[in-house]
Length: 291
Length: 298
Image 1 (cartoon, rainbow over the protein chains, first blue to last red):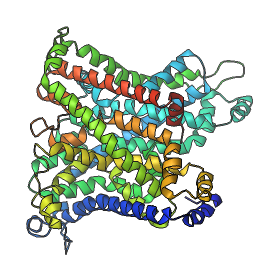
Image 2 (image 1 turned 180 degrees about the vertical axis):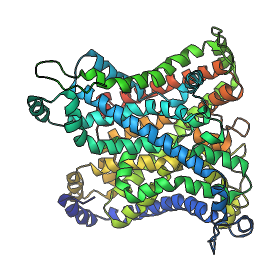
Image 3 (image 1 turned 90 degrees about the vertical axis):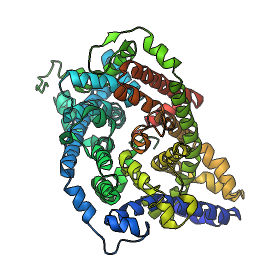
Image 4 (image 1 turned 120 degrees about the vertical axis):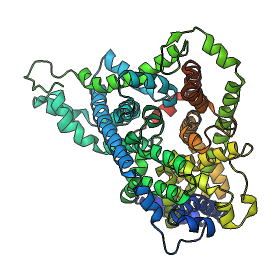
């Protein structure tokens, strides 16, 4: 984020104002560091504990550094099917996010470019959908999924995830599409392009930033999702990462380092994403709300 | 899908057709279940066998059950406490990291880490961290930290604290964005008038954040109805019923006790509460502005 010229001028100006300044900075600063501690201490604890063997866990100070680091817990987790859970999660996430982005884009394009009662109704329905709590729909979804014969498959997680990803995605993308000047569409229309062609050649490239936001937001939601897998799958073969963590914790209650190693491994992909594209990820997280 | 090239003059791809895939998915897996749960609340079903209509029986049973009121009370307490704790902290943190100082930007990188973790991961991490013998208390050598944190008395406040740890970063992010949009001239003018930082915060920052506060509060209040994952992994609603909030009550009735009718009643209550809250908060703060901010785009 590059500070605008006005901001650059404003900072020294603010610093030189009145006695309140010093006091405020101390309070804000102290509080800021306190929260930093509150966030980093648990994370530090998880990481170092995941690098101790069980003996060290029981005997060493819980906050002491593991020297030398011991990778047995990770070995134990990797021997425990975590690869299956990982690839299940990847498949569920990709299988949900791609249709969400594609369908939402097409729907947004139709809503923004079109008119008529049907599209207005569709848009209103999606807006209402923003307020539907997933938990409240889980029993009928369970009923439908069993009737469809999809219980305990990854499709059981993917299909409802797509549905619940659509409303906010349509909202974000249609707001974005509205900003494309109408003249661009008109001139392409004169060149004889159809709605279908304009959607791919004009709207798609211009909507890319919103698509990235939507993909990240939904990707995180699905990757970390717990309720759908908990209710709609059962066997170890269809476990996704969060559910795997939970099951692992149940089976290995006494082996805390291994459980925490699983926690670290489950977070790795998103942490990598955070390191590579922090700003994109954060704007994806709030999905542009309130900006 | 129609990908037809259109010759001039004829009507080309009807736009409504493009909205269909999204609409169909949404109707089947979101709207139909919403209607379905209302219907199921007037039936009895054990989750496997036949679904039999039973009129108002489930409703009467659930409303007469003290467990329901316990769950409702816990949910409302969750809502109020969550809001009262997270809102001021998020505003302060958001204002703090909206500053341009380099070290604040570095701290902010850490602030958002909880957002990356799944509820299951957070719950498991805190269970280990709160262990009286091998957790934080033992590590810092502070005996008062060695409580039975997840026992009957402390489990509920502890769960709320962990929820705060998980969600404050998100709202901090919203407030950071809100603060950065406040016109700098307001502060410059106030500085010239000799207003202290504290007075500037009260008289400029807070009023300017009004719509961010409404947005964040709506998300917080409606969201607090749906905390499930974290509580489920941390306490399973226990010990006893100490953390059995509505969403957990629904799960336990439906998928443990196999009373889907009763569980559907709880689900309907959740929907009504959620919609009521969303509408209520919006009305309280001027509907149009909030709506436009929620739709404020990327």
